[in-house]
Length: 294
Image (cartoon, rainbow, N blue to C red; front, side, top):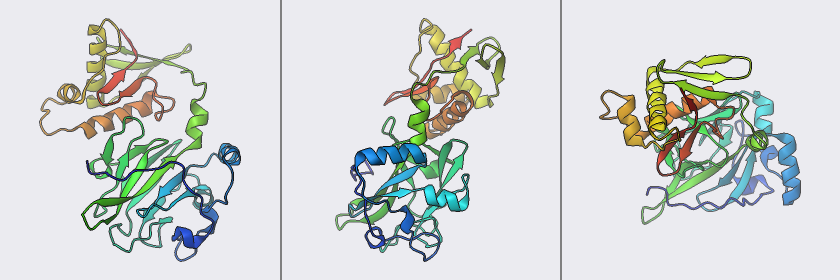
């Protein structure tokens, strides 16, 4: 496996800019994002009140601290992009004496209630260790990667003398996800018509077609057919069979392309695509579609 660094979620809170070693907006030290030491109960209350996402950071040398988005978004706007890289022009600067981090390495972008990560053509890549399923995604292989609460952004920091990689580990935390999901009950049902090859969202008031691309439709149709063959019970569909069902010429297509289609479908049918209800991941196996089939 490429990723050998371990991560401890109980991040230490540093109190000085020197401990953090980074800057924000040019050469001005970003002192505001360094949280004072507080106990767990106070931190929980603060998190619930602010509702701003943050990063729990572990540097390649093991130093741990937290970076709040509160001040970044206050200055740049709620829909602003958060720039990450070696250059002081970034919002989050990663000090890099080994020159493994690119000047403009990656960017986090907000779209509605979701956050996405995009690699900016970095030399050594941006990776995400996904909290749900434990998969490790090379962000360069997709246009943008959806970030979910608990996902770890991995950026190469240095290589040891034995050529072992040491990473910057940025654990994405979004307090809004937990608050949205608690007590969640879907407000609409989703159903699929095999004969019409159409997906619908159904409420008490209306039945609305969900617009799908041809590849998305092939994926949903195959999974719905598998459910029907499984006695109207949700069937786990693996990557290989999904690739064969989606593309007429499956050769050359990979699992990340399936992931992108799944993320796109979730954005259309899920109330919270970070906590999917209808199209779920089965760790180490594939996906399950839990909709009514007609």
